[in-house]
Picture 1 (cartoon, rainbow, N blue to C red):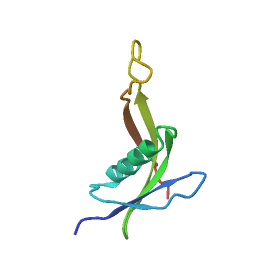
Picture 2: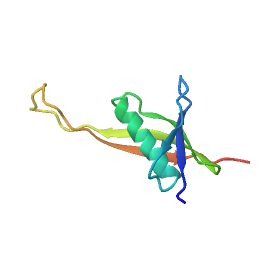
Picture 3: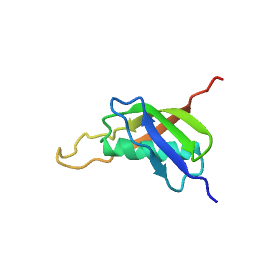
Picture 4: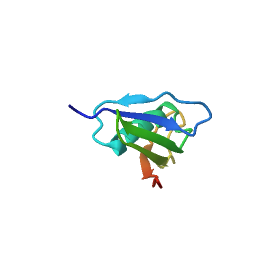
Length: 98
């Protein structure tokens, strides 16, 4: 049976409900999927935060994340023209001391 990963954005002003992440291979993969969807939905307005990821009935990991965007050169473009922005999600696993 495949592992079922769950992820939840944490340290936000409002509590965000956990989401099941289908097709995730590991904790980082699940974190990246949730954060990518979130950043896209927010239109790039929120570019950093934290995400908690766990396996149903198992291990939990917390990642700090940041979204880094590369803006294309817009010189000579029509102001009404759509531009494509390249972005990357950077995850840093928090070390849990115990």
